[in-house]
Length: 425
Image (cartoon, rainbow, N blue to C red):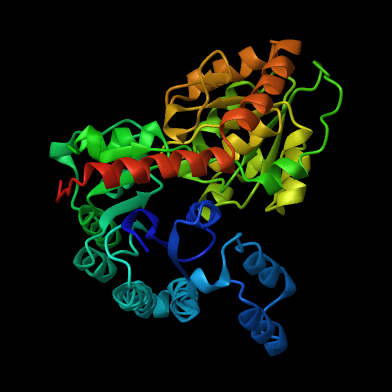
């Protein structure tokens, strides 16, 4: 296998977009190896189903991780992910939180050590090692010894800026006044620093790297496309109804997603005839603080929906509101666009929304500006539906999985041709 066709991709735990990257490279015959956590191999699915310890819902979510990847290219590190899942349960109990944190770090170390051994066994030399941040560690050293170019995939604001962005209302903090990073942020920062190049999923995430002094030519951007399954699940939209004044929010309703800002904005608009559909989980403290708001008859809580239900719900809505303070590239925004929604969001959502064309962009953390944007959208009549229809067409043309794979292959070729090796930033 030549270096051009030796692409090793390390996905880490859970369903992460690198499974789509691996499927795209397998399709063109360039995938050397796909390393991941639990993966729906027939043997693992039979074992879990026979054990009776895993619900059918969780089994289906595991099966949803499967991509069009040849089985001989997949290396599933299910044990490391099961360890991480146990760690999460322990961390939810104050008495065992310390043990949970230790087990969580151990699961990442186990994953990286095993990945390092798998990489060292590969016959091909050179190529690209594309790993998810946090899951590189020792495997990066193994790939470098094989002469591979190291590409780190990071899908949210730079770890040293994530918490400061939230506490700063979404505004970029002064790099000179940043607090010491948490152990988790420090681990991610160090793992990112091992790479030659970084791949991020929005211009906003790239901006957070540049804000901390990273060279622009080492940070590459690809917006991850909406998956074909979701696009296929979107039903035809109902006929336009300008009198429909429903708003929708999707995602974990908490401070980082702008929950407090949205509550403030809609409280300012109390005299207007609006209603709000909340899809997703509620952050505990947010639910307690805004109990009265959430108890209103015009606020409907849908909980977490399956993908088909989410596609149907989004396709029945006109306006999606997502005032996030810090994201990577919020998939729910792109999915809502694909379903034909008008979007109100912030630049920090990392979405492809263009102000005045696909919806309205408001400054992060600004409840007054958000209230004005919502009032403006509610007064736009049929223009909202025309923009929503154009959004659905734009996503299908430019932001789908096939587009992502083509863009990724182009970056791989550029890195291999360049041959430049980076260093810590």
